[in-house]
Length: 75
Image (cartoon, rainbow, N blue to C red):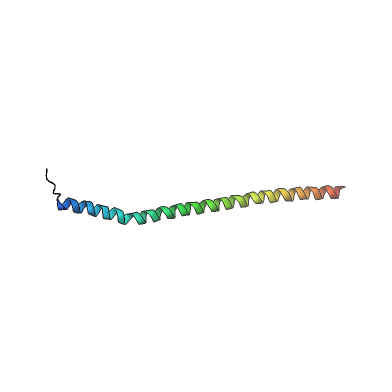
């Protein structure tokens, strides 16, 4: 068996490795940006839900306060 490798095969393997190594940083940054945007969207969704819940609490407090005022006036 010959220990000599065809130079075209060596070049093809080297070219493929260089191509893969060149694409990895862009791929990694794409994943970072997607993860960051997803996290930011979850933060905004939680903020919106929190604001909605606080509006419900404010309505309940106003209703309870109005009921107490009406009870005091009715006495």
